[in-house]
Image (cartoon, protein in one colour):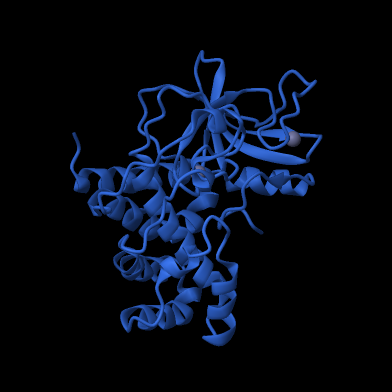
Length: 291
Ligand SMILES: [Zn+2]
Ligand SMILES: [Zn+2]
């Protein structure tokens, strides 16, 4: 088993390797580098309170109700402050435009004036009221608040999802079985009939058919609804003419390679630009695919 330093140096090497292959993604990947590294460090290191493992109703799951709509996944005594105060310096290093707003958030959290968990009080509905309140009353820019909350949510969900017992229940939807978000990237392994979909909101991967649209479940008439770039056989985008959504896809992956699908997705932003130029929208809006 690798220790954490190994994990982090592997991530650094992965980022460097992708930049070498796709130099246009350099600025974006370097911006996300400290954020990715800190997130991996926290997921590895943090201990969540020994909550009951989320209980799943197999029938509901088979009917397409994700875990987040069935079980409590966020708790007041989860380490929200520790996550926020560790992620803020990393986000500032990567995205210096957010620095002023992140400084304000840092001070408010340190003084105990706000707690990120407040956003989950109205759970499972989104805590948009709280976020708007912080933005308008406390005069903090919305992008910084949303980025920090998304980062913290990802860490908590990634940790908590590890304790879910699936009992072999198969998930047949194009959105994430844990958090209900649509995938940010797909991966197709060599000689395998399905594709893996990856959720960037919680880090979960699940199997899905290759030719059905994960967004609207339309089954394409075209045999291969994938766009490829000449000379780059591993990089493609699935697209659906019915809902006009696309999904960047890593192809012909051999199992021997170490990979991180969030980093890979950021390395494929040239495909995001091409597909959005063609009038398609991403299935999941991520910080790196909004132009
Ligand atoms: Zn998810
Ligand atoms: Zn579709």
